Length: 399
Image (tube, rainbow, N blue to C red; front, side, top):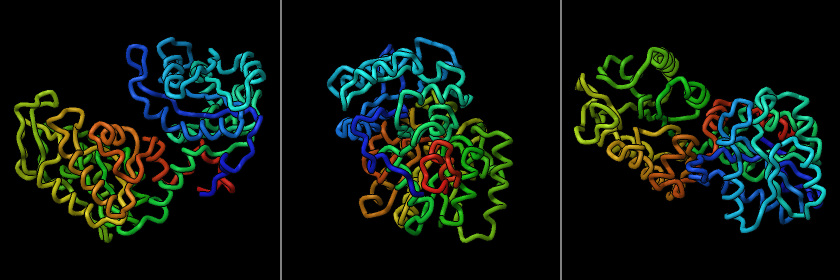
């Protein structure tokens, strides 16, 4: 995918609308995790150094088109000021008449943060008039919010109809690395899929199965496959929709040169909150009154062996309920295997969302090739879709 890049544009004195993703957790009025803020600093720095007048635009949470103080970006402004070391003006309405005034008085290299674009119902509706008002004070639009690129909203897609649109450095990096694994992965490619739902990953499996040599399935996603194969899963989480999708996938890959590797054993307990009465159960002797909450030690070894021979790894979804220490070892072990293979030269990519959260909390995010900022966006990218927020940035509208 060839993108029009802001890094190749003269932005000196230009008024730039920069779409970022500052949708960060806020606890007690403070930013609890600044990962997404930090991810945009390179693009912000580039625009400042080259003399642009930049307005930062983002959503936060789901205020449902209404002004809601708990979803204000004011705490983000404070964190950004602490990070950058200087004060940043704040406009309390992203389409306020104050926006052009602030830009007019702003020095080259200056920044302003605009209030939550989702305070307007027209944002998620991708309303053309709203997008026109958003874009009116600006000369250039820069899309740097890869994690929001799968949404056809006014601030991610609509404004590109009214302004020259370019990819920021984060979007450029995401597309380059994810595109390598999606389109021309170093062989062999190993898929590692976990999390709760088969339905969330089915498009990825359909698009990537012909390029991969093996798919390792952990987390609650494994249970529908085991049920279809005739195993008992006790009280483990599973619903009918996922069972049908698992059956569909098994039929789809029948006869292909492709290994589907399911867990041999699980860490089990009576509930996620019960971290004392736990045990290890084989997949073929699963206790009827317990639930699987992590992959077991034999599975960790088998999955790690598969990863040890990979030329590239695409991992989306944790192996268990890593938020609970008793059920985090499977995800940690696979993280260690992927990190080791990365150090040996493999290209390793982790999807965003829970996978990124696990990598950060368990400490292996820095040891893989790339942790995507996008959960849903990375899934749709690996499904082979042209994301709405990326389409205006492409040279020829190609996927």
